[in-house]
Amino acid sequence: MFYVVAYDMPDTKRRTKLFKAMKGFGRHTQFSVFECELNQKGVERMVKKIASLIEPAEDNIKIYPLCKSCLDDVQLVGIARLIRKPETLIV
Image (cartoon, rainbow, N blue to C red; front, side, top):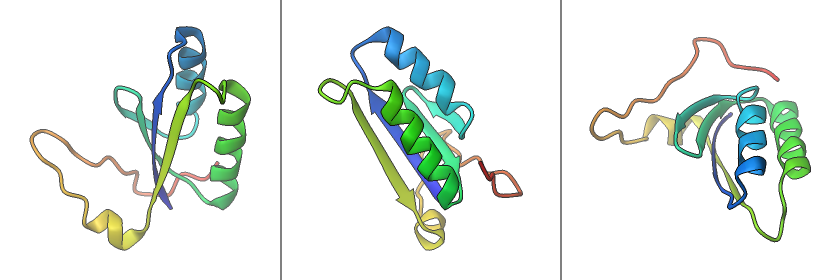
């Protein structure tokens, strides 16, 4: 499954830690946005990792799943492109 993870965090130190952790799950595609191809176990690990790094009362993390048919309908404008590996990333 393909996931888009977007985050907004006021604390630079926490944001940096999350950024570094997210590099292990997917690709950094825009400021505070990652695209990840993960199986169920991988997304569970990612959510657990995110939860361990954030302050729930201050940080805003959104994880959007995109099924195959939704992914096929993604509209790209300008220089945007959807980066996918030939094989599914399994974490």
